[in-house]
Amino acid sequence: MPTSQRPQFVLASASKARRVLLVDAGIHPFVYPSNFDEDQVRVTDPPSYVATLARCKAEVVAPQFPKALVMGCDSVLAFNGQIYGKPENKDDAIARWQKMRGQVGEIHTGHALVAPGGRILVRSAVTRVYFADIDDATIVAYVSTGEPMTCAGAFSSDGKGGLLIEKIEGCHTNVIGLSLPLLRSMLEELGYRATEFW
Image (cartoon, rainbow, N blue to C red):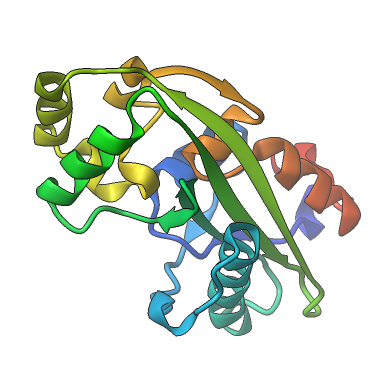
């Protein structure tokens, strides 16, 4: 497809980490947060929950950009049978880390891509995260940086939180908020190539 016919790529998310991932991969999105009320979604299964939220966010924004590719995303941490998004406050973040240390959690990220004409693809990806067995002082120091407060699961693997993760199994960019391999395959399914956006 000639570059002149390449659609605009719209990211229906205010996530700086997702925008940086896309830019680093050669896709320069127009950022237009959906402001979708996540409390409307009552799904309890992690993959279905993030897929539903991603779809809702993309569908809210897509009508305003009918000739664009619109992407919605959402991430949560599934740990001990519960779904965790961003911590409510610092005490919540500390309590979470005290439970997570030395344990394994799963980051689920939903991806929804609306193409010009309204066709929509919805997928989810999961990555297992092995948390280091850190002491309380390290937890408090990390939470005090403020970094965990804007992240699903109360950690950022591409920031200071990367020091507190022993290993991951699965797509590493999925932990940051968007699986680039999954995005590539979704674009291809819709008839595009990721390289067209370079």
